[in-house]
Image (cartoon, rainbow over all chains, first blue to last red; front, side):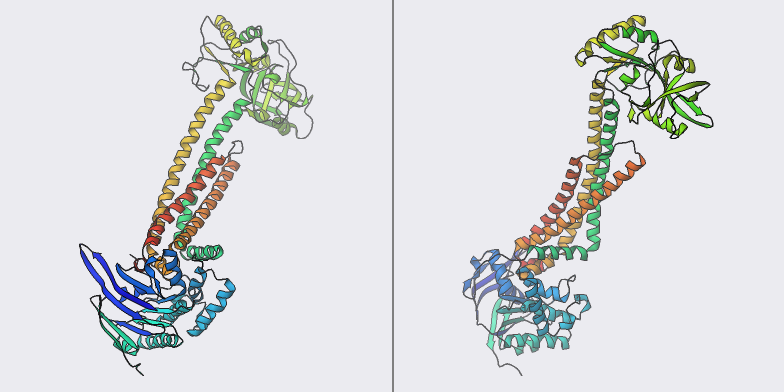
Amino acid sequence: MIELSHLGRRYLLGDSEVNALDDINLSIAAGEYVSLMGPSGSGKSTLLNMLGLLDRPTTGVYRLENRDTQNLDELERARLRRERIGFVFQSFHLLPRLSAFDNVALPLMLAGISAGERQSKVQQALAAVGLMDRAQHRPNQLSGGQRQRVAIARATVMHPALLLADEPTGNLDSRSGAEVIELLETLNASGITLIVVTHDPNMGSRARRRIVLRDGRVTEDVYQDAAK
Amino acid sequence: MSTAAGMTLRAQLGFAWVALTAARMRSVLVIGAAAIGVAAVIVLTALGEGARLYIMGEFSQLGSELLIVLPGKNEKGGGPPGMIFESERDLTLQDTAALRRLPHVNVVSPLSVGSIEVSVGAHSRTATLLGSDNTLQQTRKMKLARGEFLPPLELDSAQAVTVLGPVIARELFGNASPLGEWVRLGERRFRVIGVLEEQGTSLGQNLNEVVIIPIANAQALFNNPALFRIMLEVDNRSRMDNVKQNATRVLKELHQNEEDFTLITQDAVLSTFDAIFGVLTLVVAGIAAISLLVAGIIIMNVMLVSVSQRRAEIGLLMAVGAPPGLVLRLFLIEALLLGVLGAAVGVLIGRLGVLALASAYPDFPLITPLWAYLAASCTALGAGLLFGWLPARRAARLDPVQALMGR
């Protein structure tokens, strides 16, 4: 599903170049559950953004579902983000002026799906995260855990193949964090490829595969028994 | 497989509308700024155009065959007539009689003007008194509603008859016919022989509120032989220059060879005023354009701030699959809606302002020229679009990850 070869990302920081990612070689199969770990500045978020086509590599090749992403134009990249990739952010990134329903409907609206079809798909997605009764609430009327569940519904409403989560529990208390993790794992169990960036060793240990980054390089890539 | 994002126009409009209504303060600011600018242009150009039309209307009623003699010399020439010149020798009935002997002249009307108390029994009011003779009907293009105009008389023979303006007739006699009735003008009594039709103003005189009597009676009433004007009607426009020269020569002879009078024609007056008020309208429009510019700067600032505040939203839209072109279009639609609303509210306020002025000054023609509406609305729309588009384009060009982080 995902193949990275010699992937690098350099930034210019003032006069000096920073290697956020340096010669990454990875292959991730469909349906895997991967945790990306490492200290701050290790490049794990950069890698996740790269996988989600939010950022472009400076060097190397990223193949997603057997397509070299380097040759895609902006329209095609946008279409892949819309149809194949779901993104969950640490700070939720919900639009405050829209209800939970409309936030979840956003990708459908961008894809030009009719209002009737949107209605049923959004309801399904909200039901899957257990928030049917909060559909008309604005984000500021929801708890942090609820907000992240709305964001997960938004990320999955288009039934993507790949779900990327950047510290999804970073802004949550442990109980809502646990709920969010469970939700993500349920989605993974139903076939979606799940990649989670996390600081939390507990969470990292739950994934079947753990990749650790340091200074932009992969220092550890192990398959582990699913805890519990 | 199609790669274009298929978001429907309806959905795009809805999205932009929600963004507008959510940021109420910003929308009100932008719409208000645009509206004030547009309204200023509409009201100010209406005033400029109105002033021009008013003056043009006054003078175009004269008819292009008319030559007017004023006492006093306008040294600079070409300027508007008025009270600024000193009269050295009065215009007299002798002048009038001499002008009547010129070739190519149809009629010559003497005119004296004053203010007088008109009364019938207990009713009384002040009116403008015009002293002239039967030719005035032709030179001033007066129409009668009832009765007759002044009878043909020798210039120096008096007869106590009068023709009333319709407003005066109505105020003094109500709906009853005033013909044959007597009115008191100052100390003397006159018999009403005619009533004018309703008519606008002419040469600054509201013809609805005048009282007309023979010139000899007027001179006696005011105890003053000086004339206010002498008006000549030329038989053919092409003879105007010829008549003007002859009139100048004849009058100079009568005035001890001094040119202490001024001849004006409608064409000369109209072209002078047209030029003056054309410039005035442009100046006023320029002032209005400055207010529009200020509005544009306000719009620019508000839009700049809002787009940078909404970088994260742009990033999110791209992250959930909106191509940069669509993001740009969403912001453009939002800016367009703001611009359209601003222009519409501005046109509305401007129209209301013009209507309010029109009801306060009913005689003043207030017409905003179409170009002012178009220019003001287009400027407001353009400012909204430009200043919505520029920062949004910059944001949409970023990689989503940069936009997401609000950079």
